Amino acid sequence: MKKLTKIFTVPALLAVLAMGCNTLLDVDSDRLVYPGDHQLNSPNDTIFSMIGIFTQLEKLADRYILLGELRGDLMDVTSNADPFLQEINDFKITTENPFNRQEDYYAVINHCNYLITIIDTALTANAEKVMYKEFAAAKAIRAWTYMQAALNYGTVQYYTEPVLYVNKEVETAEYTLDALVPELIDDLAPWTDVDLPGGISLGADLSSDVLFFPVRMVLGELYLWNGDYEKAAGEFYALIQEETYTIDDFFQSLWEVDNGVFVSREPENQGWPYIFTLTNYEQITLIAGSAEFGEGAYLDSITWFDPEIIPSSAAIDTWNDQTYYHTASVQRPGDLRGDMGSYLSPESSPVIETNDIMDVDRTMNQITKFTTMATDISRAVPVYRVAMLYLRYAEAVNRAGKPNLAFAVLKHGMSSSTLAVDSIVPRNEKYLAYTDTTGVFYDYVFFEDLAFNNNIGVHALGCGNVELSTEFKIPSLPGLQDSILFVEEKIIEELALETAFEGNRFHDLMRIAARRNDPSFLADRVAEKHADNKEAVRSILMDESNWYLPMK
Image (cartoon, rainbow, N blue to C red; front, top):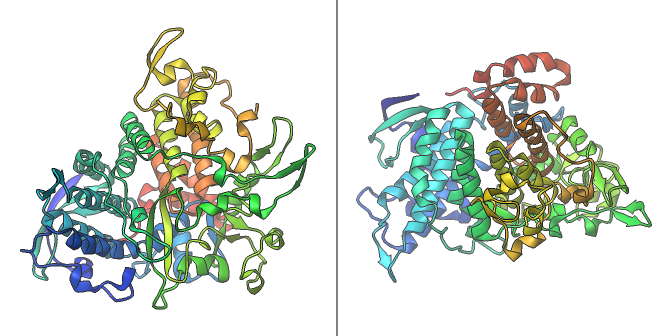
């Protein structure tokens, strides 16, 4: 539903006018908010305004991870965890919890509103609308932020006019999540063909290229939430094609095999953890900020140096339940994205040599994903990366009635050779029109570019040569809908294997549960990690109103 209201500027929105010096690049705050009669008609102006948006996004980084994972089934707390972290984990979040601050979302939104409203989109140079890039970038960040607020709180106050003065009156519309999504789609859809702004250096280890949110990625996710699966597939596919995003074996982790015998896991052959560095081609979007001025890297601290959050037993079981394939017959249990990938077990600690390994107590399983995403001057959390993009594409095409195509994303990788085999992707799933010998591909199924020849399946990143497996497959099922549900389960499992602890899990479970009109899809999974009060947690989560945070 949508309800029109009028509000005055309140502390939740005044936060945008108060920025400390302990922020991204320590930019002077009076460069970030201008008087209402100032128009942005210089690229330099927009650079400072975009940095203002990035500065506000920085406040959302830790809570994006913690709210998205501690409420899910893959991350748990230790006995010495901060009480506020325990509140999140136990669905007992109070209004005093520092991770429950609605105003920080509106701070980002207000900065975006300002840039969108004031920027001179008519400015041209060499027959190009030179300010469109920043305009579209701000719209994408605003849409993503509105969605995060709606996913966490259930409703948002939607407004597009910037608040610049204490006594400013603003008209807002109150939107539920279901009502918000179409509004954001309509706002964002006209901007899919606009390139992102060029990158600027933010120090020795970071460029602003990875701080922008691709319009197509955000729009594709909105279409997923809206049930427009072919449109979602089209946006994800277009982004893959435009940027030539591939999943190749560079980030694959491997077992050493000698004469058909698994002999060792050499650290130099564990390529998958290298994804989690500040600069590599797997990263699409990061929320990044400064680690200077004593701010440090909070997630690094609570996962590695003094663990307060750890992998859940369900997460570890999911990795351990997989099969690694050297050949179809030479195999062993385990997904290498688990131990020595997403986390480090006490047993594996001696195998990994790091500068601080001797200074940390290794008595528990510890999350490692954030240890390489923080340097002396920068820190970041992942929002979008290439493997996630392909998994979103798989989710979309599966629900569009193409489960074999979706499963090929997991097992074989999208390439011309994969699509050439009808037993992998049947003709009716890849061709809009076809005969026994020829066919016309669906717009979002054409992977003929040579760059995609190196694509491997997402599952192969941690499970070896899965394309050789005769066990990892869609079983014979009664009908198409059964196959779609089976593959959807495999995709949600793959998201656990590939993107655990990255901030998506609770909302991924929400989306599938809402799609199936079945709250138990979420409730059962999350309750499993609460061994001492499993039924009580399940009962809480069977009521969908408890999926959202309390508002102040």
